[in-house]
Image (tube, rainbow, N blue to C red):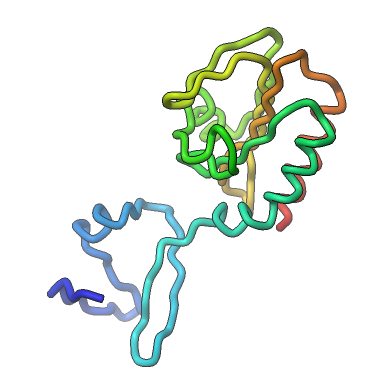
Length: 166
């Protein structure tokens, strides 16, 4: 662990300002969650990603649903896809990021072609905004080459509920 040479005072309410330079280096933005760890006489702050914890819990559920329906389900956080497969670590396309901000869901009515970085998928898409503690945390994306069925929506709702209630 290296020292930064930056010192800050704690105010009367116990608050401390994290310097802008450190926030930029660590990718910490306003509204992000931080976790506090205690290591002997040290307090360690880490950026806390809710979706990182949910990713591991939901991966076996997602693979089971992928086996039940002729579709692929992917989970993203606010920036990139987390689930293993062709979209892992691909950035969230603008149209899905906009859904997340607006807290809206989306179902394609016809075949669409969407680019995810270097990966292009063509087919039907069902996107559901994931909400935890009243905050949007990511997108559940169901992708299918053939037309979406009611059962696809049903399985997407199940996975969404499991993730949001984990």
